[in-house]
Image (cartoon, rainbow over all chains, first blue to last red; front, side):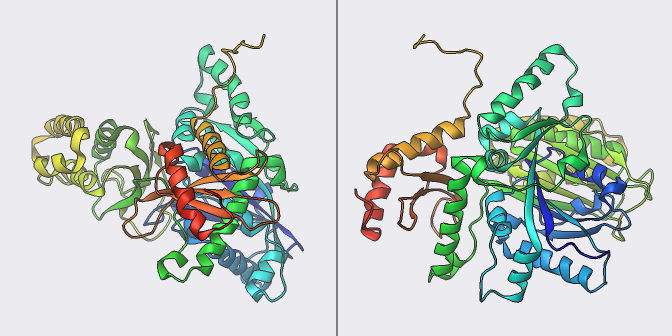
Length: 392
Length: 99
């Protein structure tokens, strides 16, 4: 398949746990999207998102660890250039559309500036190729009806993701059963239009994916004064960083709020399924809103050939899904945590206590978690107390 | 009906309200016309010894480069006094910013 002259690029955004990977899975199982190249970006020190997305025969999937908006726009340019070169040279199938799944903490501003950049004389071959071959054709932002309001109130990234969208998709609307919740959902478009007046707000249920990802002219001007200002300020800050003589200022600024961090846990041995459930329940009930996201793949003792995929979004633990087989050669449990104000050590201690039955240093946990510890200790203690004797 | 407040109207977003407040204070303190575009973003800061987050205010006067004011506070904690101090400090580096 030959490459089109100008390849549309769509940004798929949405705060942590809004359902981006679920939508991507649905999309990649649709034959109409077989000519789609996907770039998956995640905020985490070990990549797991690409394992949780099923890949079709003709889909090219590239994973960029780290955050595109923090790592600078060169990562996106390099990935697009690589995709173009590989397809042009016949090394991979051609594609007629690119979807960039942004990290849940991603700031669209630097990526929009990159994709709306006009070709300039004297630019490198890579930059000229990307500027000429790709164009921004739409920004789709997913909005979780359960956690969306809190996310937009607390996290500037979530507000910007709504602000930049030309399509906002309300996700998890199928969970709304009672009339009061349905009425709340009916009011959401007005609330979202107060942030972004020109975006189309669509219900996830029964959505037409082809229409959602059909190329259209993306205009930042239509998004309003805030978006125009963010883009202009983004360019000014990038220019300041380039002009700075101080080495540390040449690094792009990170964009995430205070205390937001990511860490991972890797376990070599398969884990009894009930224990992973106990760990996630204890962690979620103890950590409260500071636990933004947990995702990962788990080697289960009862069926080591069929791993579990686990998701926790703030206060909601999704039912784990079982994969028919491992998506790669690595058979270890890999869990990624994104937290706000929670350090890795107490989470690792809790994991060790529940999963590995490792001695639990309560005094150290007290120091590390401060006022939030009482609930965690109490929760962990009751879980440990319920274990069979041989695990103690 | 001037005093009527619609109780059913969508609640304004807290961050949007704060952003509008910061823009108004910045225009006032930098002595800029009401219609001067001002942008506000919150970024993490890499400077050693600084708090890990800062608010950056961009003043966008027509025909001039964008001037930035950096305040080492989260957007929610910005006060008019903090902007006044930052404008005073910035005016030395950016002569166009009037304290």
